Image (tube, rainbow, N blue to C red; front, top):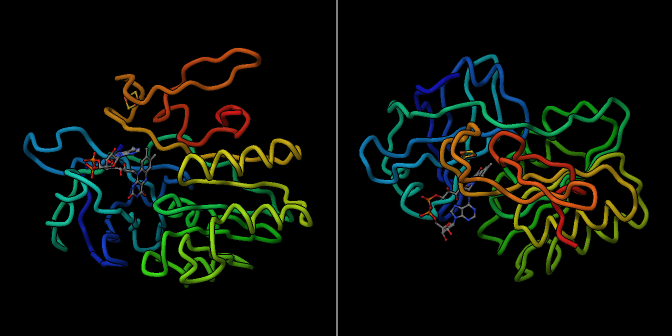
Amino acid sequence: MNFNTTISKIERLADDIYLLRLQSEEISEQAVPGQFVNIRCSTGLDAYLRRPISICRVDRDHHTFDIVYMNRGRGTNLLCSLCEGDTLDAMGPLGKGFTLPQKGEKIAVVGGGIGIFPLLFLLSESQCAEKTAFLGFRTKEAIVLREEFEKASDKLVIATDDGSDGIDGLITAPFQSWLEEARPDRVYTCGPEPMMNIVGRLCVDKGIFCEVSMEQRMGCGIGACLVCACKVNDADDYQYAHVCKDGPVFPAERVIRW
Ligand SMILES: Cc1cc2nc3c(=O)[nH]c(=O)nc-3n(C[C@H](O)[C@H](O)[C@H](O)COP(=O)(O)OP(=O)(O)OC[C@H]3O[C@@H](n4cnc5c(N)ncnc54)[C@H](O)[C@@H]3O)c2cc1C
Ligand code: FES
C-alpha cells in the first residue's frame, strides 16, 4: 500500500473546490472506481486523523491520479496550503469500489455536490452501451468538471437548487422522470444522504441494481478502529459494517432508510 505521493498539479475548480494531481504508480495502477485515499493533512498533531477523499480519475500512462476536495474544515483547509512538488501522505487505494457494468449494459449515475467525483472515475472506466449522468449542484458557480462528465457520458443532465443552471430544483426529479421511461441495468449514486435515499428507494422498488457510496467520518480507513461503523440492513434485522473496509460502496437495499 502506497503512502508517499508527489503533487504534480493543483487547480482551483470553483470557489472552495480544488483538484490535486498526485504521482503514484501503485495507486494509479491498482485503483478501481469507488475507492478512496486516506490523507494525512498535516505532519503535526493538527487534524491528526486522516481524511478520506475519493479517487476521481487515474492516468495509468503517466502514473498519476486526481482527487478533488472541498475546503470544508480543519483538514481540507490544511491541504490548501500545499504547493506543486510537495509530497502528500495518501494511504490507498482503500475500500470496496463499484461493481463495473458489463458490455452492452445501460447505466446511470446520480451524484450531488462532492459526491460526483468517484462517479467520473466510474463513467471513464465503464465500457458499456449507454451512460447517463445526473448531477446536482447548489448553484451555477458550484458546477465543476462539466466538460469531463460530458465526455465520459452519452447524456449529461444538470440541476441546480436555485435554478441558475440546468433544471431548477433537485436532481432526483429529472432522474425519477427518466426512470419512468428508461430501464437501466445499473444505477450508481453518491452524494447527500437524502438524495441517495430517494435514488436507492426508486431503484429497489423497480428491482433495478443500485449501488450507493456512503460518506462517513473515518479514523484508520482500514477496518481497525470502528470510527466508521454504520448500521446496514441484514434480512429482517440489521448489523454493523465498516464503511472504510466493507464499503464505501454498498448495495442500495442494504443501506437505504425506509
Ligand atoms: C469514502 C469517502 C470519500 C470522500 N470523498 C470526498 C471527495 O472526493 N471530496 C471531498 O471534498 N470530500 C470527500 N469526502 C468527505 C471528506 O472526507 C470530508 O469532507 C473531510 O473529512 C472533511 O475534513 P475537514 O477536516 O476539512 O473538515 P472537518 O473539520 O472534519 O468538518 C467540516 C464539516 O464537514 C462535516 N464533515 C466532515 N467529514 C464528514 C463526513 N465524512 N461526512 C459528513 N460530514 C462530514 C463536518 O460535520 C463539518 O460540518 C469523502 C468521505 C468519504 C467517507
Ligand atoms: S475508519 Fe477505522 S474502522 Fe473504518
